[in-house]
Length: 331
Image (tube, rainbow, N blue to C red):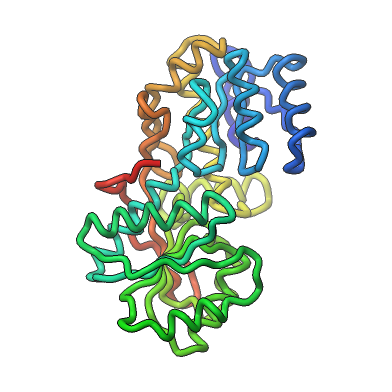
């Protein structure tokens, strides 16, 4: 919304104003499909933005039938583009890229062995351990094993006990566990006397993680970007707060802003707002976003985008590094 207001205030794109039409499908398959049909057939939308939801593949498939381009929005699963079809694009960082960065980072720290802790319940927690493992092993590391957890279990003492009794102990633990589970797991892990470093993913980029105090100190995770003074994202956060009166609630605010800027660049390149022209332009668009450069790969229709590493340091989020991995595992 903020990006669209800015663009429209400057005259819009191709002499026309952008209009955002949003619907909340409440993660309900039938309701979401009904809204998608309405947006396509009745509102005649030229471009759709998805989000993290169970019905997203169905919505995307529906968009592809009349040839309406759709992005995965803030959904990072790299399989979505191929699962949906030729109208789908991924502008946001993908999970195989953040898994690749996590694996390379762990190897760079000198860690030789790792334990991965995943969950088969959803693709995010099931696939990220594989992406990490492939990158870590390619960099010379060795995976000692994989343990399973249940999302929202509320108690991770069985996993902690297994880790504490491992012999030899791993040099690092990798897990795509996310809020609110991570603070519980980390408190139980540290209370058991296990001080093994933990590397995780963007599901922990939330102030709620810091409430775990010393238990998460030193924890490192991959994410989209980190707002810092003197950076594009830091300047954007400051401008957003000044103009709206509210600080951005999440780094995903920057992701959403970049989504619209990417679309604007594609529209200008296409010289048209027709869906077919937008799709053709999206495949070759590159922009310097507030979260980093976004360059679309025309073959995969997934962007090449740097991944940021963040460490919990002194009870705050601290920047570690930002890079595109040398090796990106297959989806």
